[in-house]
Image 1: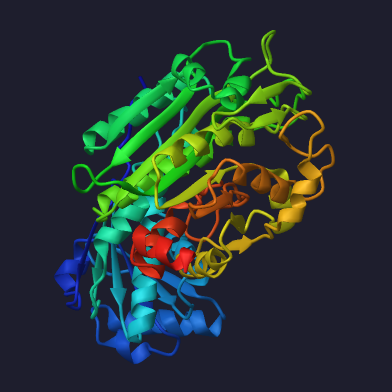
Image 2: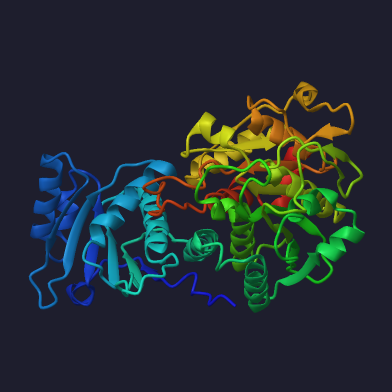
Length: 501
C-alpha cells in the first residue's frame, strides 16, 4: 500500500484588514503586492518607507519584484511585487514568479498584503497567488535519503476588500496536487493494484463510492479493446475503476469524467524509444483530481469517474498489429499499431460510462504526440461532438490559465480510418493528424445523444513548470474543468443545456 500524503497541506486565511506591525512580525516572510507607482499606498503600511523604496527600485530596474529584510527580531523577509496582469495565464505566471521570490529562504509562514489595487486586479492577484502558493507548498514524491526542507505551511492574505473564495482555491489545489503526485510516482511503486487501492482509500474517506471491473468482469462485458492492451501484462490486475459522487442518494450522473490510466507504456510490440512512460496514466489522475475538487466544493450534481487502469507491456500474449478485436459496444477494430493503446482502453471505458446515461462526458488522456507537435506543451487540445463546446472550453481555458485549442471534428476524417476487415481502424498507418484521428476514433464509442469533450493533454508536462505550477508535471485539466463547471457555466446540467441548444 502506498502511503498517501496530505494533498492540501497549506492553511490559507484572509482578512479585509490591513496588517499591523505585530501581525507582520509573527511571519517569516511577507509579500506586498501593489500596482506600479503605488509608493503612497505602501508608505501607510508597517515598514512603509522601506517598502516604498523597494517598489521604486523595482520600477527603476524594470523588474516586477524587489526584496529585503525587516528590521525586527525575526528578520522577516520582505518582497514587494508590482502587479499588472490579466486574470488567467498571465496572472498565474506572475504569481509563480512571486512565489519563487518569496520562498527563496524556505519560510514556513507567508503573509500577502494587497495595497492600492483596483477591485479586479485585487481579485486576480489574490486568486493567482493562492493557487501558486498551494502548488509550491506541496511536495511531489521523492525517494532521496536526504531530507528536504519543510515547505510553506500557512499563508494569510491581508487587505482584501472583496471576498476571496478560499474554498475554491483549496479544492482546485487539492485536485491539482492529486493529479501531479500520482503522475510523478515511479512505475514499480504505482503498480496497477497499488493505484486502484490508493484511489479507493481516498474515495472512501470522502464518501465516494467505488466499484472495480477486473479482467474477469470485462471479459463478461466483452470489453475486447481494453483487454487486448492488458493481454501483455505480467499480472492480471488491470481493470476499470468506477467512482460515484452523489450529492443526493439516487441522483443520476450529470457528468462522467473518463481517464486514461496506462501505468507504464512500452509501446507493446511496436516498441517505443521514449522515457517517462510511467506518466502515461496522468489522464486518469486528472479525472480523479477533478472529481475530488468537485466533491470538495460539494457541487449539487452527480459526477462519475471512470479510470482505465492497465499497462501496455511486451509479452507472449500481447496484442499485435492486424489483430481484430471487438469493443464493449460491438464495434470491431482492426489493430494497426500497438502504441496507439490509449484509444483502445478509452474506447471500452467511454462506452461503459455512456451506459449510465450521463448528461456530459469529458475524457482526459496523454493520447498523441501529434497534439504536442501542433501546440507545444503550453496548450492542450480539445475535441468535441458539439461545436458549441469550443467557445466555452476556450473561455474556461483563458479564465483558468489552462489554455486549450479546439481542433476540427469533421466526419470526412473518418475516411482515413476505414477498414476492409472491421468496422474501424484503430489508427492510420500515417502519422499526419493523429490527434484528430484519435478523437474521431473515440467518438465512435460515445452515443451522439451525449455531449462529449476529449482533452488531449499536450500540456500535461512542461519543462520548468507552467503558469502557477512550478513542476514539470503540471496536473493540467483540473482547473480547466472546475472553471468550466463553476464559472463558465452553472454546472453540468447547464453545460449540457448549452451544448444541446
